[in-house]
Length: 363
Ligand SMILES: *Cc1c(COP(=O)(O)O)cnc(C)c1O
Image (cartoon, rainbow, N blue to C red; front, side, top):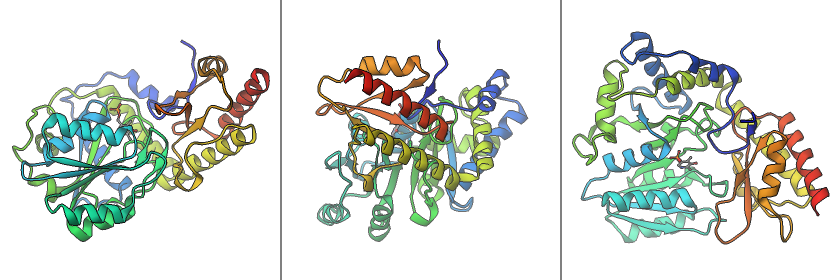
């Protein structure tokens, strides 16, 4: 297989040193390995700007969706009702999870191009007093839109609602002040902005909330409370943990610190994203989301002309060392370019040169 830079929203391009960690086989009972899990949990709290006093971190086997399902299934009780904000596929996925688990929920749907309106949400929760939880996605990876969590977190504080945030594709790449915002549960995974490899998700949880969830989960493997109580003892996961992915993640977290933390990484992503959109706009490839709402994580682009052949384009770019991402919209022809991972300005410049040449030749 050709070695390419992945311009995708995870799995993404990791550093050589992160990959090298996976050349060592580790034992799950080993003290050194168990302490790695504890170190990761402490570091993640720092990234989240959350105190050990009020918050804890739970790592959960599986991809990001497993983490979201673990939170909803462990936290929501039969008398609760969750309002799910939807402006993309991942919001929709949360509703699907709620449906599968028999959780009482309602949805607030927003056009994929726009952000949710806080006043609309206020009206909904004033009308429906049963709503106890609000769940939403931070960066909707479907389109690349960045939803305004500050305002909605504020609303949750005001009305004492539990706030569940899918920050899968933004955590580590966009500063999120978890404690200050009062977020109750934040879910992300190893293979996004922390720049590790796939294998597990993690949850930053308010201890007060999670403490009240004993015995609530209808799933054994996705019982977040039970996972927490086991992990809390000495860092040993309940069931077999993805040892290679954990070691890679530990290195990735150290490298995030070395880069200068979330703020510095955010600036790198933002700069790359701006450059990418500017260069492509110059050759007639326009972003789907307006500048004000665009995240620095991933961008959806409209096909530049009628009859644009994405597969041909994709293969042309792949032969030259980059993997792009197909679109996820059913009603518009789009493709996506991610700029998270080990991707730097020189990569973006090289990519844009290749795209420019393709467009010149194919038009
Ligand atoms: C990646 C992602 C997920 C999780 O998807 P998995 O395929 O389960 O890893 C959930 N929400 C968002 C916003 C994502 O970007």
